[in-house]
Length: 347
Ligand code: SF4
Image (cartoon, rainbow, N blue to C red):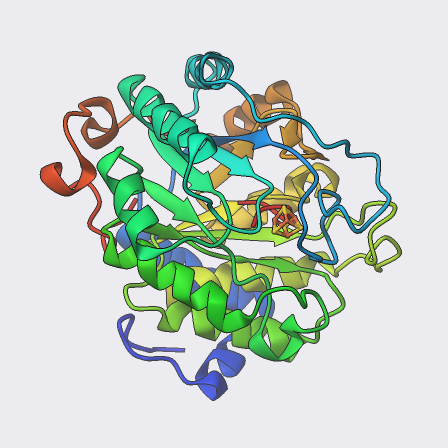
């Protein structure tokens, strides 16, 4: 399907793309990918849970919600030094982006937020890109994150606006869009994606992708999560998604958001090496490394390194933007959201 890459996509156009013969879709996505990215390069990201569990929200997939009886305990917030030790280890293992997730409904001003700002400064001083996922935030809080040097803020839409109410009732879709707007207005890159396999229809996946592509500016980063059903959550018995639906979504994300990093996030542990290879061909160019994604298991480092080596791919090295951190994001131009640049259980 020959379509200009910068157009505003209608739902019908996205649906037509999504429903193409799979290999034609992957072929087209691969062509788009090669025009905008180095196809051999994969960015490794590490996600740390800096405040685990005890969240008042009711996201039906999330073991960190205090409403569900899961094996996740509520922990105290990590100390800055602990987080920086983890960031250093992630960098030494090849990650160039370090993401920090807190199981909060929203950011509250005060000591915990000040501590997050210190973590961001420390992560940037290690030469890493810094990303946070802290729940909803205000415009002023977004500006303070930008001043601390935050590279990107993750806030997923999770699913389509239509299906959203079946998954979360404690915040609205519009509130999510508002937070994303504050992040973009502060000059922080937007990381925004969704979760597949929560019982949504194919049409919901199509609408989610269309909504993501319609964000202005488009997200610099699009995490595509596959649900990991966790015992104790309302989605614990959810049937597994057809893996080719996952590949289709990745390919369509690549075509609709040609400059974005498309990140394989939660759910990778149960996805075969062959399917992941197909996802890379379809335009995925980032993976999360580390044993856990917040609270869900993730492939081991050896598996990832071996997979990249077997496929002839290589990990992205730190770019100048991340490794020459000086001053604020706004001051050095690092945070232009339209520039090219988390996981199921992230806010
Ligand atoms: S996804 Fe985030 S906001 Fe939702 S329950 Fe889990 S930690 Fe809370």
